[in-house]
Image (cartoon, rainbow, N blue to C red):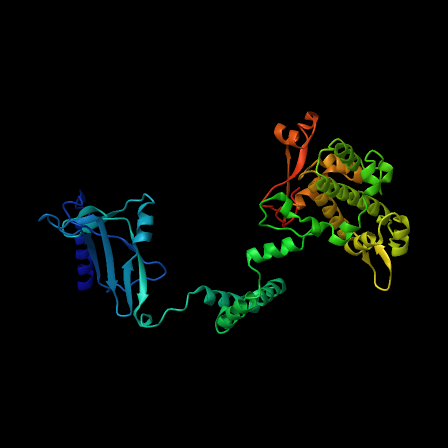
Length: 436
């Protein structure tokens, strides 16, 4: 009975309280100081008895001013027996930028008032640190360790294609660590082998010496000294030239070894009009013209695709001294093994052309007309120009004075001549693929 009465009295008290009016109060953050804060525990909830503290960042004092909070930024820290919690500023700021605001409602049971408190800030995102793991050294996060772990994972769980790619990558990888011990020996070996390499100047000299042209002088200041005459025509062959028949009748081209050369015939006509020229100079020029005519005939005879033996060449050049024929065969033809057949190969043809044009330059006072010689040799002007460039000539038009000194007509004012200048400069050897 007593218990029933007690229960009824308690019910009356509860009903009386429920009839009391509730009131709301909105508190400002300025009146409450910092105010309550909200925190979030990702994947782990802190024990209820974990103490938390909120710290504000402060600026240094300036001119006796009081310390102020740095833009209201605060830090929430909590510590449990096994775990430490601390707010992550970057994640917390990201949550604040989301635009959500939070209010806290606190009911006072004594006064039946509900106080609305604005949260001091958006929720603080907490990160945790296990105290027992602090003393453990973190794992190696280098690129090498990552690659090794990735390779092991791929070899264990990867597909056949992925495993094949891993093996191919491992085969192509250079072990830098293994090279460190032998790197010095490799460098020393390179230096030792490099001692035998040519310098830039030596390589240029070697390339120039390998040119299929007459012997030359790079230091000559006079074009006449660039290609000495005795290096183009040996002295024995030059003395063997007989100009008696030609000298007495310069107009009779039938006395020449090859009478179809327009270049030679023009020079003979020009020479016939200079009776006052010194006898020695005249004879020297006649011998050079006779040798050029001989070279024209030699080229005509040896241009046979299968070549000819020495007797056949001498028979076709019967009016030429044997010493000259032998010299031309030895310098400008090649023979195969166990054969006496002389062939004017491509390389020998280039060499022959260089010697012929060098001799023509000397007769032309070192300014030749490529068009006339191209017609005589039945080759294109482009090939003749390339041969002149290989001799170090420059293609340019002559001035009126230069034409007058050489007895050339004004109709050749726009014609480009191959001019040998000093010091002689050869074209650079092109490397790489030709641009299209």
